[in-house]
Image (tube, rainbow, N blue to C red; front, side, top):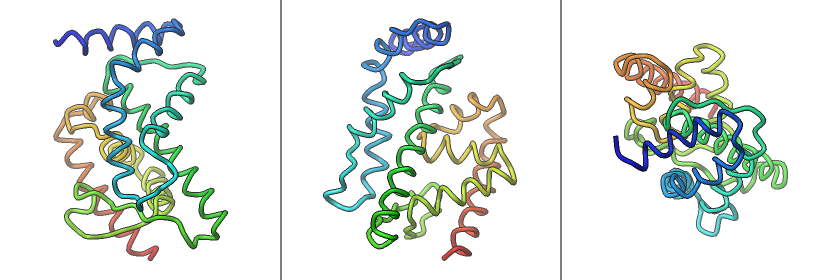
Length: 189
């Protein structure tokens, strides 16, 4: 195991055990990866978007610091939590923009090729969040797979580790979830 990965895992365990300063030590080690996730989200937004990747990472950090109880076995679980936090931030932002503009100027989010299977399809983040909530109500694991893969940027193997299932199960859930979401999003158009 590479040293930085091992160090992050040890710090995550320390943070889980209640060592508050461990998160401060983790962030410099994972910042580049978190910024990459945030950058992927923001790359599909209109130019001049008021929420920038750095601000998204910083807001996620603030929310993580405020988290009362955390428990991690590995890096993948940490990035899964970060994906959830970033998703909530982005959806909250999109909902507030819709409220301000009454839906008139909410920038569309391009559903990446992994989810849209090559379709040039654009939708707003609120619609994706609503569809993902509906999917999760029908199949919680498929909802988590989408959240971890799309919002968290986790690989098939990392997602399998977080969910404690086989990579084959993740692939199957991913394919089923993509089809379900495509259908649901088309229906809501």
